[in-house]
Image 1 (tube, one colour):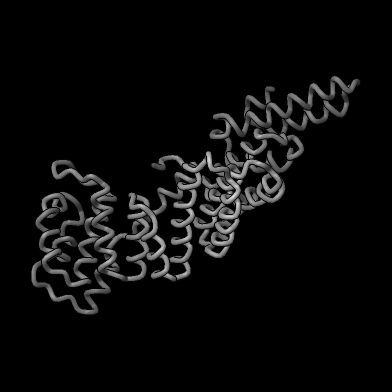
Image 2 (spheres, rainbow, N blue to C red):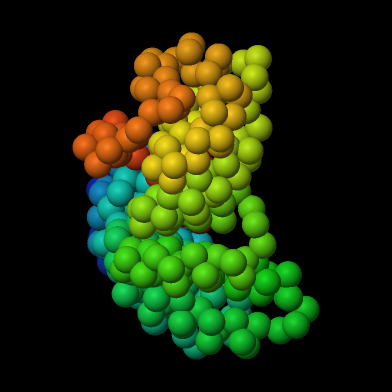
Length: 316
């Protein structure tokens, strides 16, 4: 217990394992093992996990896998550890952990909604790790599992189907199938996460008309106040939309954008760039276009949605 209090879980559990082996009666051995299971589960299902590094948490799990309960507590241990690994960007180990859970524990489980939820979590990790093929494969498995979810969980099924479309669109965009990705998003109800992904895909594809429209929706989602300073993200979004308007040669839209946000942008360190991009009657040649694109910030708009799936701190 002293080792546990010092967060030296491997040492403490090894001592308990040795004590169980030396126990004089089956009852004593069972009691020690039961306490080990409690300590093991508590580590991964309480605030203690936040105090342990991802690699140490993974090491404890790997050395004492025999303590993993077969019930829902064991599933909670695996999923919490996977999320802890994602926070530390240890993506491959997190994906392997969930993949094993799905194959060994959930494929035969009757809780199809739980299996589908874990599959979506794994798909989100594949997306983070830039693995579109694995993402698409997992999404097909989730779809199969959703077909078996009972009708009394229709609300969950509807949310999951929407998330599948969003994840599939992102995976297709990662394969540079931009048009297919944007067409998929047309089937999903508009929301901040959908608007963010539309903007990212259109920007990456250099579909400037689509990017300008989508970025306008993303800026509206920010509820920007004309009387408060801009956040760093809001500065980038306003500037990026100005660039998209410039590159699609929408002079009227650019003039309106300049009039609306020039005062707010003048209070930021991007004021000069915003002024150049939105300057009236500016003729942007190819060289200017490259300069514009090299000057804007890359904004990972979709990351926050993936964070929410993976339980990363700060996700909305």
